Amino acid sequence: MLSLAVASPAASAAAAASAVFPAKSSLSAAPRWRWSSSSFSGIQIQHKGPPLGVPLAAAPASSSSAARSRAPSVVMMAKRQEELTEIRAKTIEEINDEVVDLKGELLMLRLQKSARNEFKSSDFRRMRKRIARLLTVKREREIEEGIKKRLSRKLDRQWKRSIVVRPPPSLKKLQEEEAAAEAAEKSA
Image 1: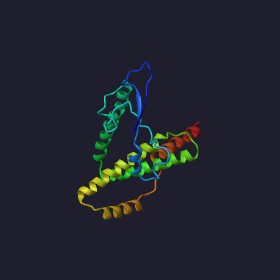
Image 2 (image 1 turned 60 degrees about the vertical axis):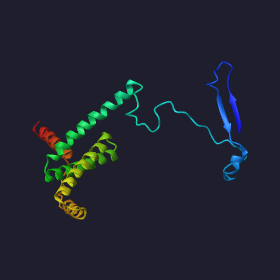
Image 3 (image 1 turned 180 degrees about the horizontal axis):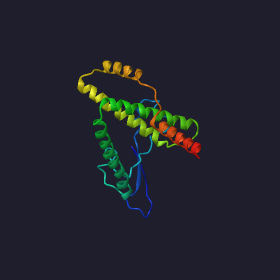
């Protein structure tokens, strides 16, 4: 076994860097293709933080920025719980109507994006999540009623076919504003 140690004169013996190379006999047991002419197998890097197996929540916070970054998630969870209680208070018909409206709004956002109009990119994710929550609550109720997956899909197809195409609420509001503006121009 060959050992190599490097240390500066001012450094203590504990701070000296050392490397250990295995003896040639231990190398012969390994496959020949794995050990080429060099016996260098890499460097181990020490991490200066919590151990890799410890979750960040269990590790002590090193700065106040870590504490600040956790605060918004708590508020988000509270809002989500509030939203879920609001959704669970609705009937299936109200949930279906809201899903149709939100999908229409999502379509309007896509149209705004393709027309290169101003829009909030965060609205896409927010609406998709809201739709997913609504559909999740709807499916939870079906499970409580004992409706199996196959029947649920059949009922969902029937519901989708029965949807009457109507403009989304934002477009209705826009049309009402335009109609009011035209009426104001005619009266003036």
